[in-house]
Length: 320
Image (cartoon, rainbow, N blue to C red; front, side, top):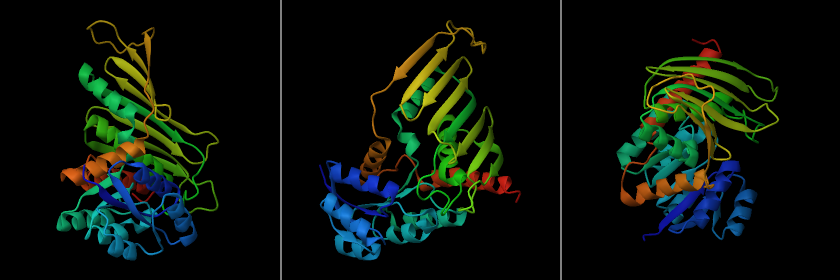
């Protein structure tokens, strides 16, 4: 199996996980990591037996990687990804950019070079989402409604380069689009800021209307507990999904007759064997690079989720 030379730009909270996974992957040779904080990069390089660089350009020129993860603050995505895509394939963390124009610039850079561009919408790779999507398809159920909660304490960079809608809410915007494969026709949102240390929103509620279903998303980084749950109403079933435990509760109507009255329906619990979504995401990225195929999350796909998130932000701020 062909080994790919891999590298990571940005070694913050998420970037450090990328470094770890690349170092463990069977057909990945981690050839370098880059961060402006040379102390952090040096310590990681020693831990994972690779080389550190304070400048990403020097790393790309010297190491010539086949695949690079970019895990820098969102406002830096356009500049770095557009530049790196000239030389190699890129997995850029979500959101693809902080503006539509930036996302288009990245997409065009990938098209021009022919290198692979994938965006890290990590929840698509959560085993419970893959299981649920397959289960719905095999039963022929129709999606009616989503109620999603994604709350918790802020990560160290929360609010530094984006608000909670584009940082956290975009996960669930993307999942609703991915599951329904339906166009979002209407968007509404409300948001508030609680922390004086950030100029961005800390708490938000987002509403989406598709052709055949709707979604309500609550997201914040102000809560003392971490919750990642989705409640899905189908035409003859109700499902509770826990992203963190990778488990599901299924309530399904017995018999063939369609009926939305689910009181008293038997409950079935599904507990999957834990798999790290990031490892599955990076496996997909490296597979798409090796095989020269389109990855699961393309730049164009990520742009559509970004457009919805940015529209929700503008609505919440009273700009439109």
